[in-house]
Length: 142
Image 1 (tube, rainbow, N blue to C red):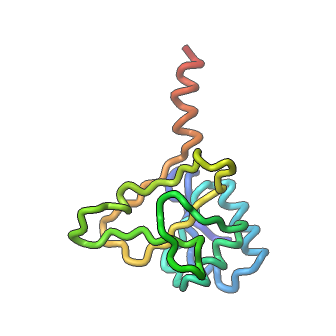
Image 2: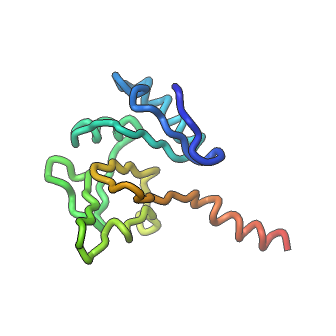
């Protein structure tokens, strides 16, 4: 599968053309790439809600987030909308983050599907284990 590195070895971008005819074999390849690079980005992948659920299911069983968002619909309880309309004071998208320390068994990942992302909007991602290890390592090296 072809891909481009995003930054160093954190994250890769996979062309949408690589994902035509997705099946379990494609899913296994994507899982392996995800485990190795921690972040997968696919631009211009046109999915409806069912196709998004099918794509995400290639990585494992989907879970519902009960803490923060309302589900998109009863048919798709594992899909939630994160919306920030122009002029809206409440910035749900600005405070959204993925940590699940409050779950007995946290999910292994999260999938975001951008529908309307204005030009210049950055969606930051971080490597939590590395961000925690650096301060811990510094203390150990003292």
